[in-house]
Image (cartoon, rainbow, N blue to C red; front, side, top):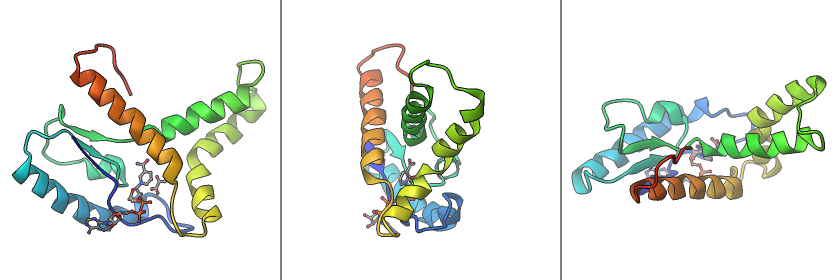
Length: 144
Ligand SMILES: NC(=O)C1=CN([C@@H]2O[C@H](COP(=O)(O)OP(=O)(O)OC[C@H]3O[C@@H](n4cnc5c(N)ncnc54)[C@H](O)[C@@H]3O)[C@@H](O)[C@H]2O)C=CC1
Ligand SMILES: O=C([O-])CC(=O)C(=O)O
């Protein structure tokens, strides 16, 4: 299994889209190497723009875009916003969506461009890898 978070770090005021051109070239060269030396590898791409860096000709059973970070954020904020009633109050809905969409930018701002979201990404990546391993071990009903 090859999991790659290679590419340009996100700077303040950058969106995920802003690094697509540079990251696509980096991912292309790495994937060529994987295809040559380990063509049966399961390839997990983290580099943004994730849904575009996984585009092209590929085996859908072996290539994955790791998008778990936004799932982790959504789970976290839903718990925060719905406590204690387990319902999203109508007046909090927009704030919840905003938190999920833009908290990555908040992390980059807090680190002043020195790094992006490292701990949450490590956790998100761990969850994705664990799911792939479970699926490879013939456990059914594994989803991410
Ligand atoms: N899908 C997701 O949830 C997330 C995606 N990312 C993406 O991961 C990428 C990297 O971000 P960070 O890890 O924060 O940056 P970073 O700067 O901490 O790490 C980037 C790594 O890529 C390597 N690298 C740079 N250019 C390369 C090249 N031409 N060939 C091979 N390796 C190269 C660097 O040596 C470094 O080890 C970005 O595209 C970022 O958007 C980051 C966090 C979450
Ligand atoms: O949203 C985040 O925290 C990090 C991210 O995806 C990126 O740097 O592209």
